[in-house]
Length: 179
Length: 365
Image (cartoon, rainbow over all chains, first blue to last red; front, side, top):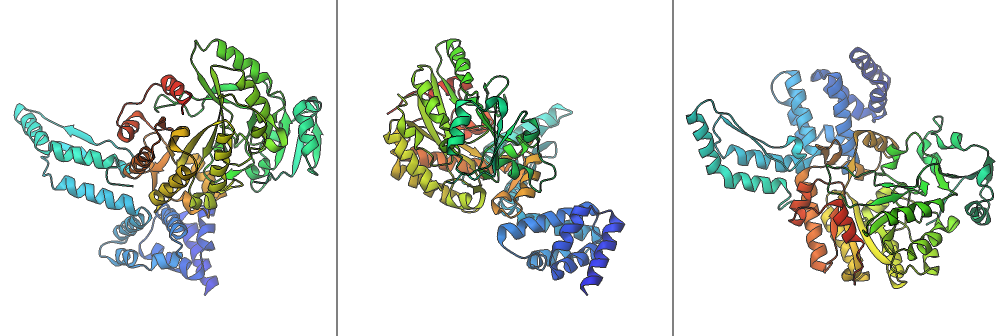
C-alpha cells in the first residue's frame, strides 16, 4: 500500500513538474495524510502551484494548531469544500479558500465583516470602495468615475450618505476593537 | 545565560590587543586559533547544515576597517524613525532568535566578529559630538549584535560606559536580552548610559528566543542597573500577534511595572514582527517547528510580511493604552511603522527623527 501510494505520488509529481523540495515534503507526511492529499490532487485536478500552496497551508495550520495534516484534510470545512458541486478546478479553489480561512481565521472574520458592511451600503456602480488587499494596510481606497455632471452628483451624494459608515470602516482597519 | 563557543579565532595583528588578552584570560578551555587573515572565517560555510548557527559558535577577534558609527540601517523615509545611531563593535550574536533580521542581513558574512580596535570608535564619537550642533545623540551597540551577550568575555561595556560618562551630548544605549550586567555594576554611568531590554512574553521566549535570559531575569536585571544609577528603557519588539498575545503582553507589562516604577522608565518602543520574504524563507527553513513564526502575516505595502493591519494596529493601541494607564509618562515610539500608524496609535503625527531622538535621551525622574 505504502509503496503504491509513494509511486503514485511520484508519478503525479513528475507529470506536474512538482519541485523536489515540495515532493519531499509531501512524502514526509504520514501514510494516511499523503494518500489523502493524493486523492485531493487527482480528484480536484490540482495544478502544481495549488498543490504547493496546499502543502504550505497544511503544514502551517498543523504547526500552529498542533493538529495532524490528516485531521485538517478530513475536517468538515475542507471535506465539504472538496465535495461541493462543480468542476474539479472550482472545487480546488474552494478547498484552498477554506484552508486559507483556517490558516488566517481572524483575518477572514474581519474581512468578511467589512465586506458585509460595504455590501449593506448599497454603493452606486460608479463609486468603488476597496478594502486593502488581505487587510495589509489601514487604507481604504475610493474611486469615483463620472462622465457627466449627473454621474458626479450621484457619486458625491452617495459619498455624503455613506461617509460616516466609511469612517467607521477606516477606524476598524486601524485596529479599533481589535487585538 | 551561558555563552557557548566552539572556538575563538584571533587575527595575528590583534594578538596583543587589550581585547584579545582579556578574552584569552577568560576563554576557559575554548580552543584558540590564530590566523593571518580572518576573511575566510567570516564568509558563510556553505558545507555546514546551518551555516548561520555554526558561525555563532566561532568568535572572531579582528579589526574593523572603516567607521564604526552609522545611521540605523532600518531607518527609512517611509517610517517614523527615532534618530538612533548605531555603533557596530561586533557583528552577529551568540543568541539565536527565530525572527532575527541578521539571518538575512548577515547571510553571506555571518562570522561572529568582535573588533579589537573598538576604542577607535571613541575618536569618531568625539568628532560626532563636536559637529552635533548642541543636539543630544543616542548611540547604541545592539543592532548587529546583543550589547551584553559576551561582555563577560570582553568587558567592552566598562570602557564604553566610562567613555560616555565623560560626554555631555552623547548617550549610550546598551540593548540586550540577557542578564549579563555584572560589569556594569563596577562603573558609574553618570547619567549617560541607558540600558534597554527587549521583552517578550514567556510563550515567545520559550518558542523563539534561544540562548537569551528569561523575561523575568531581564526585568530583574533592569531593576539592578536602575538601582546602580543607569537609565532603563524597554522594547516590545517584535510583538508577535499570536492568539492570546494581548493577554500575554499585558501580563508582561504588569510584571515589568511591578518591578520597575513606570515613571523611572526613560522610554519604551513597540514594533510588530516584520520579515522580508527572503528572511521569512530563511526562518521557515531554520525554525520549521516554531509556531510563533506562522502567524496571520500578510505582505504589507512596504514589502515585508506583517500581521494584517487591524490586528497589528489594534494590538499597538491596546498596549499603548495599558502602558499609559500604568503611569509611563516618558516617550513611546513605534519601530519601522509609517506615520499613519503612529498617528492611529498615539493620536498625533510623529515628531521628526531628530526631535524624537533628542526627546528619548532627556533625563527623567
